[in-house]
Image 1 (cartoon, one colour):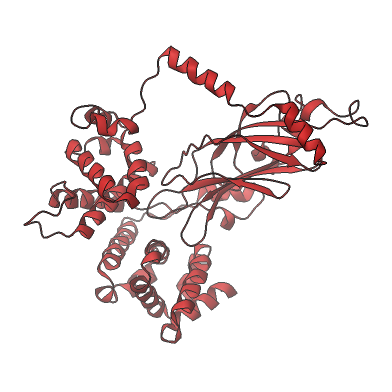
Image 2 (image 1 turned 60 degrees about the horizontal axis):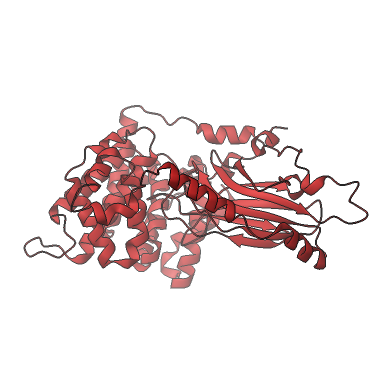
Length: 444
């Protein structure tokens, strides 16, 4: 057994001897070790009940860690031996944790009874062929379709019990916390449906009553400002579905949902936006080069982070919360975080970086924001001198070290010309040189 995994499991089995701070450190080590552990290694641990009780106790003590505890529990309960060990313990667990664990165990049992054996992860196999270990590829495991559909059904029942109102109504027996949980369950269920390629999104189109649900979401956003970003991301997903969009376009929701619906643009609007984009391409290149030369820089790299596409999902109970980091010669800029989105759009302002040498690299990294530890969603690194030089150009890179995902940016390299280099160096970064493909480079 891997030494780090064995140490983490042993520490978690000593629950009674751990203080609060040590519990958090132990859980973090356990989560990281289990994420990359082979099933045989997990099955070999004898004190399964002690580890599971540690997770239940930690779940009760640390509300901030609820999502992380459930993600680790899902890893463990995918193993039949761990599911069997958990069964007699569940009655003593917190209600939400016990209910989720029961659903996980049923899904595992159903798969075993139907003889549905797990196939190797093709994305990870491809990654290994690309020159790195499959354990390095951060791809969330695929969940049971039945579990996802059951979650959606449960969410709709809870919304119906609340009478699609965020106000606490007499006779419902519900508290405000129950209403927040109903929203959160619905949001997670929609996220899971949209990210599971096996489930047709038409199932979301069949949900009713759409008008009442949309009104409920708007009430949550108004009364719970902390939930605003989650509501916005959910509304954007629903507005991509024709039937939901049509309902939102009618009164009385038309005005309240306008911000989530992309209006159709006429030719004049597109022309104005295009002109605005051209006018926002940043400061005068001559001024940038003059300032860079005074600082002794080799050149200036202009970068605007636009969007990412088809990112992997690194979260377990929702979608990734991506942000992008751009680094040149130790200078790092970071975009905003986009919650619950695998196709985020940033349209950041134009950044300028001093470039120290012709050999300098620009590193573009996409990360998933997490309460515990941010997870990588892929990166790409290219020589600065190979960026376009004549003008700011839009580029789209395949992200490396992940199963899939692309990053879209605008970039331009301005080279400081000196008396010694004017005749020998390529003009402004060598516009005729072709950018390398990160995916192709791995197989070279």
